[in-house]
Image 1 (cartoon, rainbow, N blue to C red):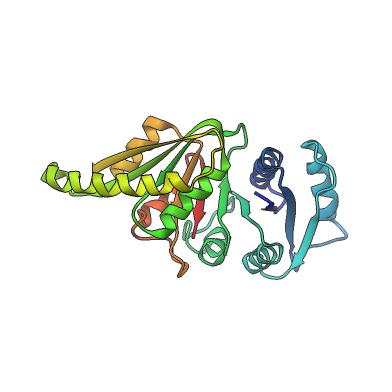
Image 2: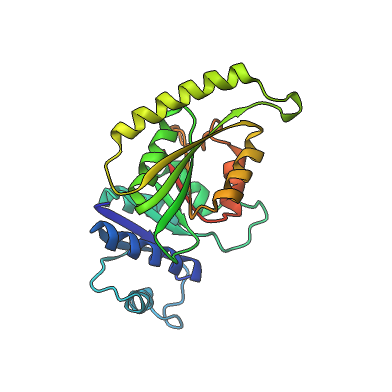
Length: 263
């Protein structure tokens, strides 16, 4: 992690994203920058300048000279432009905190996920290093990229579990022949990934499940209690249907932990 960018809107949710960014920057030795998008109709005469507020938050975290960027314009476009300009390795956001009648759809977070060229981390908790993580892994390139990026965030001694779901309707029962083929393909994919992953003191585990995707993922989350969930997104900008599609969206709406999306 050479360059980490935190988007901060002065909310408590963004404070948690800033704390997570500070923790990751310290552990990786990377640079931390903060971007704030200026509201066009903000009353500067009655509102404390965002720079003063952000500097106060940085001081609370014991951070020194962190570059602060203030950009006018549409929130999503300004953040994406800043991430691209800095060639960021990771963009960190806080959980969307304003109520929307359409739920997750149409929020700033979704617009960023659909267009951002760098991995996006939705940070909801900054209480400790990532020692338990779960990556939804199918056979797409974006899923493998998500796992690689999650691996870079793991702490020494941590465990990243790759979950592959062989989807069948649970009413049909197990199909042992299909499951055996799926396991062979999954084992080969994991072997290829293990050769690529640098040694950071973490461990890569794997789980193969047969059943309905939503149930399999929910069960894995309940059992493993991950601090980080990683999903892939297609390069065309859509969250991958192969990687749980609407289920991924559901986890972004109600995240049980931090969520990483990588394209």
